[in-house]
Length: 132
Image (cartoon, rainbow, N blue to C red; front, side, top):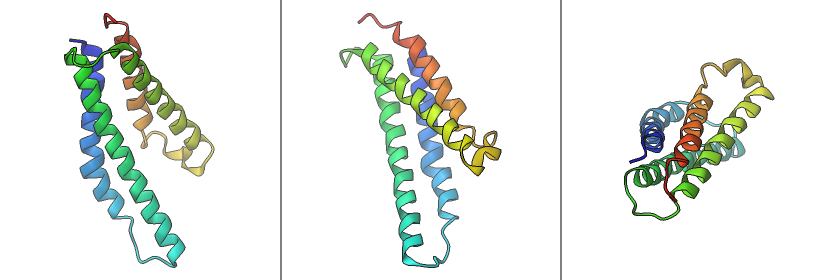
């Protein structure tokens, strides 16, 4: 068993749960009477994108837990590497987006980047613990 990859998978799964249940509730609270159809369409587009991330977190967590705890899939090192890059990309995307918008004042409250960075570090470290 690869503990580093397992921890990253568990963190991803906990993130999925928080995203799916608490985050969705918070996001729904932002829905108001829309001033026009374009604003309403944009809100729904953001809400649907929210659920794509939720699905991505679920799939990521399942695959990471599977490769950490079994030999069911081949190329586990490569899979861990791809997810490490994904989480690293998410980290930088998050920080860059915050830094170039007025949202930068919320970087401490919007701490998701720390979770992404932690998962990336765990995966980069854990990928070298696989035999293949």
